[in-house]
Length: 67
Image (cartoon, rainbow, N blue to C red; front, top):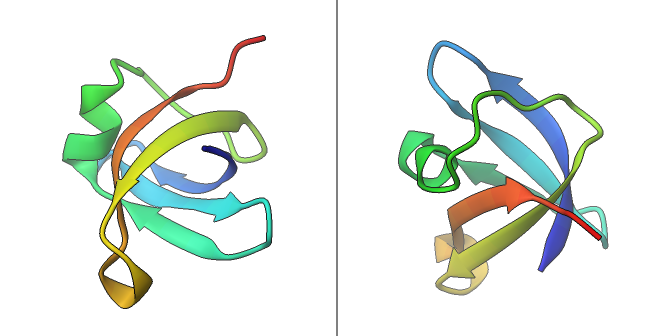
């Protein structure tokens, strides 16, 4: 699924993305590190994989969206 980077902390490697419907979804360091990224800028398009549903939904992988 695709999303847009919304926030990112270089110190903690955590932040949040906005899904295409505007829903914010947080990610933690393991999800960021699993994608092999070095940094992330707000507004970048990303590809995410999630687990769970509803309030338990979480990002487990975050990579850059490439065409």
